[in-house]
Length: 381
Image 1 (cartoon, rainbow, N blue to C red):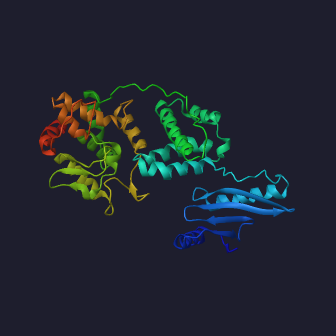
Image 2: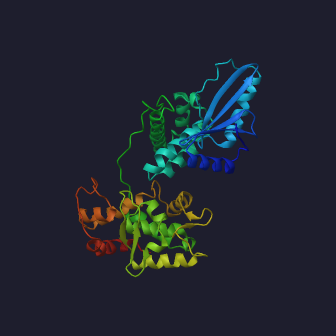
Image 3: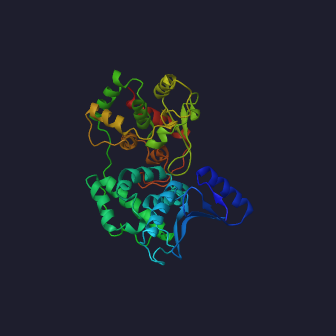
């Protein structure tokens, strides 16, 4: 049997060779006693194989990359120690793969969330923040309803997070059940908090206070100022604004093209001259050319969560209970209050079918540009 020094580089090379040859190959790992890796056309399996006192022991650890190389080494060392200490009888180990919940979530994320969900990164953020500290290192056979309830009890005071965690775990468990990696959905039967259908928008007094604060020296050149004004002037969702590409800003025509909206279609939104000028100033303040308008220099991408800056802005303006998404509600509300037809509001919000605007409409951007720019002029500072 061939052997391999088990590390990521060597393993990837061998995997590629096997894919080319089309033949299954098993390697012993020279840097991990009794650890083997079986490489097939469709999967890569780590397992322990040890003969001790005339008895052959075999234990599957899990599949790469859902089981990392370092984890496979750690698990094989523990299993080998248990064998040598006489913990197992011949058939105690069996061949059942018991994965940690971290690996099960990674399976869900790679196989289901990334290919199918635009909000896949939000799933990962929720998992890392609220679920992983309780369940990440637990083996699948140690997951039960009591553990899930501990996770939920930790976020019960924040109703929206509580509901999101229930939805996330339900999806994860269902995907794992479909793939025979778990047998039960442990959030089944747990009720969410009722969601109140209240649309929050800025009152005239709150809008005046917000404009006053944004116009102060403290927020000159601050990204949260530009983010807020773009949101009020366009009704775009948070992620669509933060991920604006500089190349999609058309100063000559006075609009911004958003490539990937929630309904799956691109949308061109009109921008006032005042906001365009603020965008120019913000771009000029960047020390180097950037792909995104709201560039995050630490992660070489765009700013994903302005929660802290938003909270400070709301405190400075004396506004409570107002979310970033409520800027979108404010935009739509002020359009309706100024007698913009609901069909045009639907077009401005980029809805395909929408009960909030009640009508179906297919108008061109040029039909609504003047109406929108005239209305949102009240947001300018």
